Image 1 (cartoon, one colour):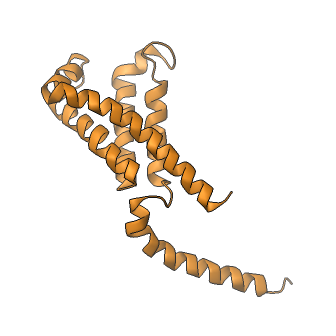
Image 2 (image 1 turned 90 degrees about the vertical axis):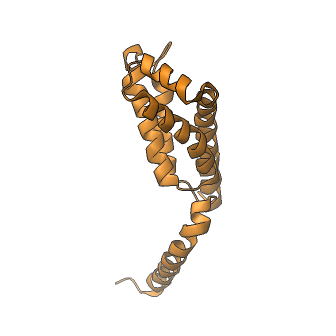
Length: 154
């Protein structure tokens, strides 16, 4: 598969995951910190105000960063914490599928984590950091391939 196609599909995946987290974050943003804290506290989640701040921050600000490809590993880890927290604290008793099931939060958490560490070159992370790292290893890799190709097989 071409590198270009890999990068475009990583971008598409990042955008899809970010849009879903962002939509859930906007709901919490509209409730406000107090309303979101009341909601999560009513579900028995500890430290409801801290949790509300975390969820709103990750789902709104983190999603903007994730879509742009900024701080991908960090946001991926935060998405995993967000989603797995929802799975274990809210959705687990409902089972995998059906009303209130955890299939969506499981997929979002792990897709966010995977894309956080494999976000592709169409990202601000690559533009700001990856080119410098990739340029050195790419040129070393090209030299190694050229030497290998010229080396006779014994």
